[in-house]
Length: 107
Image 1: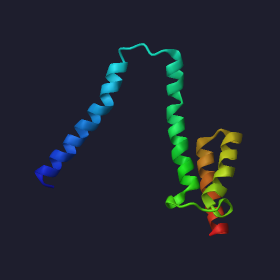
Image 2: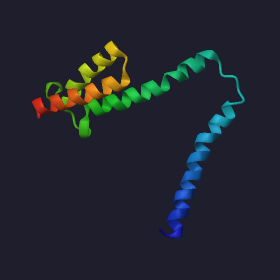
Image 3: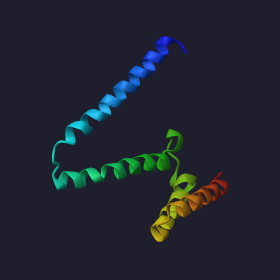
Image 4: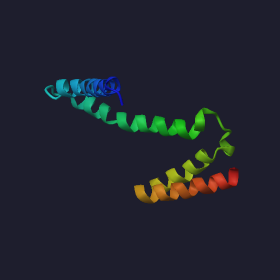
């Protein structure tokens, strides 16, 4: 790669690191109230739920009728499996099986 590309890659890495480090460094010296800490604890779960819901309801960016959507058909028993077992690995493996079955049935 040319020196210009390397400079861009390194510059973007430094910019990315600086953008992420600045709030952490600033907030590490401040006592955050318990209510705010509790509120912030829901952010990762909310972001993950939004990503997963988007992928289930709009696979490949297009709406699929719910009864023809293998992603949604597989997501329901997968969620029930996790609720019942609380096993991440087991749920992941069964979720794959559910999806393959739903895809085989629905096409």
